[in-house]
Length: 372
Image 1 (cartoon, rainbow, N blue to C red):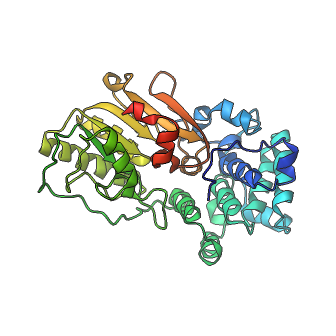
Image 2 (cartoon, rainbow, N blue to C red):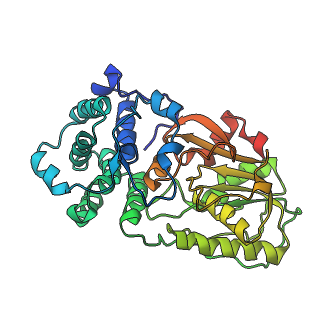
Image 3 (cartoon, helix red, strand yellow):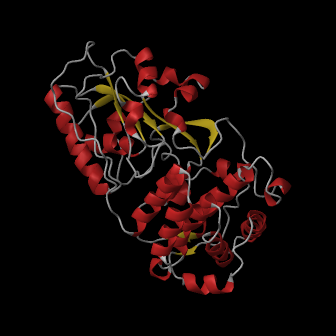
């Protein structure tokens, strides 16, 4: 879905944005704006953390997004009201013009109208991003969710679209995204005394960017890259795996399994590199007594009130590596960065991608081996 090369996005205020530039980059900015509209314009008193404050204002400014907006409570609107008044589904250029206007005025109702319109777009990226905020703006019962799902099953072609859709639908009705990899058993030994372990993230249906192969010994290209730098990475066939369910419960089960895995092998105090919600499994396991030395978190959805590290582990050895305005983290409604004074933030000059942090090319291009 995302360009392989590093690029700068087209800001909302740029003329190229409203003209929908030939490079297609304006489309990604439009998607990001739609996906984060529910965070920008709405709030919930029930939320334990304010993810709006965890957004990087510098990155919002680079996208040309106005963060000084009128914010209202969640889900007070009826989707059908806007669906009736917005019969023209709109071209990408038309949606861009509406987005630029909504961004300039900072009015939540205008943003809601934009989201409702875009949630019926024929462009799968724009549609799924808009749906991510539609369930914030509108009572989900007023949205024909089965019809939306049916549309994607008929029309979507990108695996990343289904990844975002799975995350968004889990916010409506949390269900586990069942993984296909059970925990391994202790029946083989590493050739080198292990000092580092790799932990994959959520395993979502149709997902390619979050598939765990990157962390699989003798299979994952990222594993091979890390092994070239750290030959002490755990490479036995009982390496740690978890089912990858997209729920807090699945992560709680995983943290217990991880703690038991470390205990049974006497491996507390290892270094660890983890991706996505695998990072949160690592942090959650410390509440049971798991200990780590160097901690490398890749594209971690920040939910600091639920998943954090004890103060003793908040050292120079804890690092978060991420891209800018990660679509998956936005859909998850996680924070883009850790609170000030906790974990250091290494921000790559890459926009929107969730999987770039587990690609060897990214590590080589940006000298990330130094964090191992």
